[in-house]
Length: 82
Image 1 (cartoon, rainbow, N blue to C red):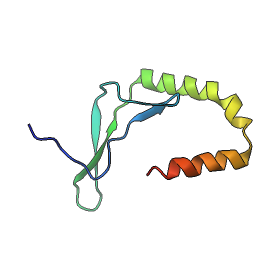
Image 2: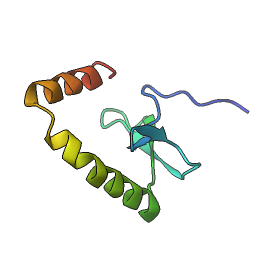
Image 3: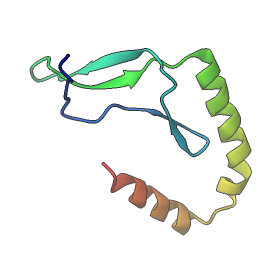
């Protein structure tokens, strides 16, 4: 069986500081240029969404108390991964 390769890595959910891929169903992402499949994304469930919202609510007090300079630096680090 051949392994498919994509231009970009498959996308995972990022919930509570962890990338998750719980055997979820996936959806292809197509290039608008030529229609080729360039990646896949999870079809998240209601349970996935609930976990993400709860994690965000728990993280909000600490994040909102973080100085803007530190928040910007975090986003620059995250952006360097792409």
